[in-house]
Image (cartoon, rainbow, N blue to C red; front, side):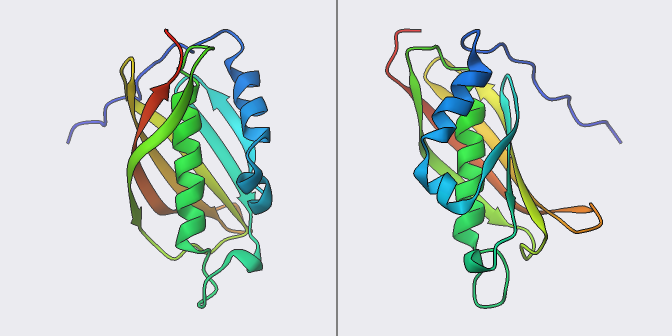
Length: 154
């Protein structure tokens, strides 16, 4: 059996990329409404976190699929944004969201990781995990997304 390929290494799109991510994220009213925060930022990777909230569940008590999709999409978009030049922005142009297990936990994480970065188009994968009170994590959703750079000459 072969080992999985290591995650690609990327260079940030601008020197102050971490602050740029945090400043942009702070402007996202929907993420604020959901109680999501930025946990970690690295070139080509962003982790978001959100505590469990009963008001964001569906009829069976699981975190609503729309919430997991929003988490995954934002993590993917910001992972791509870490690689964008300072004078540009990023928009999602498509994604596929797979629900792997009921989203039950005390805390949720969305980890976006760039798989391939071109000048205009970036392919990203996000995994949403649910963390139990004992710290154990379980993947509950997986997204593959395509992001497009908008603006900028970079």
